[in-house]
Length: 242
Image (tube, rainbow, N blue to C red; front, side):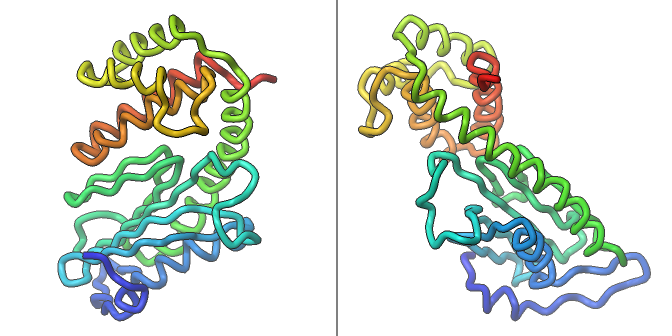
């Protein structure tokens, strides 16, 4: 159920036991936001969800630099996201996810390029702060790389025979289901969005991702695996120029 921040704050945290010391939803969120502030970033367009009477809390948001008011900046083609889950029913550790996309399914499955967690013990806040700080460095470093990579994609030609070869390779790697092969080629030939036109690697990359949107709605778990495999394919074929 979609929730407001006030609803999240109002959830009562169960009493601790000898072996289980739950972190409140609001303290968990503070771990994330305080570390982001130290790095000069913040959450944007945050979505909060509560389930099981508020015991299960998940959230998802864009990451943007703290000194901008919206996602209009250098590198705006690169999307960074964070997701998080705090379950106060002993079913899972407190978890933070990050990367170019984050998927949190209703059954509790979570997918992202980076994931850290901490069990609900006496040291849970300290553990989460330490692990999230390390993961955040990797996430933000990847952001800089992705900005450079996408700029190079826009400047690199991708002819139709090369795009066909990319599609075949994607099929072999499990990054593209057979039913979408012709859809991806059609999207390359006639992009749905003006900014993706031009017959470049950027055109090809967005042909894959545009077609993939429908798969994420139907089966986010499988689509997440396909997305990771697709990213590896493009990184191998078009590495960042040194």
